[in-house]
Image 1 (cartoon, helix red, strand yellow):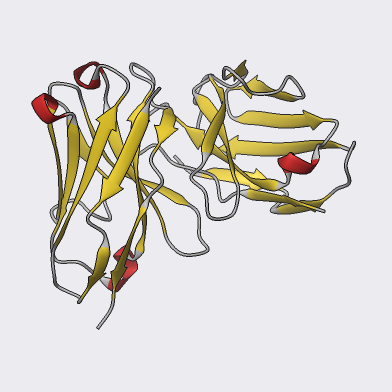
Image 2 (cartoon, chains in turn blue, red; image 1 turned 90 degrees about the vertical axis):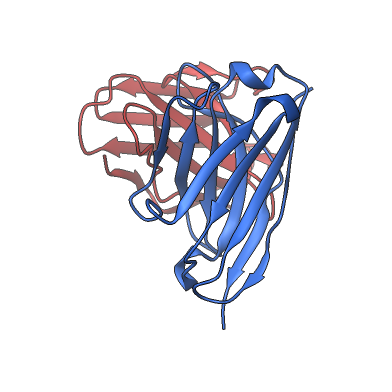
Amino acid sequence: QVHLMESGGGLVKPGGSLRLSCAASGFTFSDYYMAWIRQAPGKGLEWVSYISGTSSYINYADSVRGRFTISRDNAKNSLYLQMDSLRTEDTAVYYCVRDSTPTAYADHWGQGTLVTVSS
Amino acid sequence: IQMTQSPSSVSASVGDRVTITCRASQVISIWLAWYQQKPGKAPKLLVSAASTLQSGVPSRFSGSGSGTDFTLTISGLQPEDFATYYCQQANSFPFTFGPGTKVDL
């Protein structure tokens, strides 16, 4: 069955960097768009970034464009999110999700990894 | 595209029929999903394309609507249905979510 496992979260100071990873299994990884969705504590959901199976299409929410970089390694069945210039408002649980390609529904989710940006 | 939901919370009892409404700020055809989230857990996709129930989702859940107005109905609320429900538009990036509707006892 589909399994997504995030890692790399933690505590970082404002202005710092962090790299999240997601290990995928149970499906043909390269066939699917993948995404990162985040949820601030006690708040709603925000679709952060999106990448196609071949990495030819990438998009970002305005709130993170220019600071975050999404990437993938199909040989390793892995998705990444490089987060630079972190702000306190980036504090959230970050979920790795599989997109129900070709439609943009998050049909499988990881358990999430908490990123806390605080001095 | 802005998504709104009503109500923001609803108190209900086991066996009740609950209806949650989602509205998009522009026409999104049927490109809408509903998710269920329980405390401390990741959301779960319940309905896609406005009315297509995901495999394994009980038939007491149903979705309807098109254009800008959508509903999620739970017919015969069960104890495991107490959760927060989110709608999400899949028409254009950024794919935005509604603020959520909490269904509690």
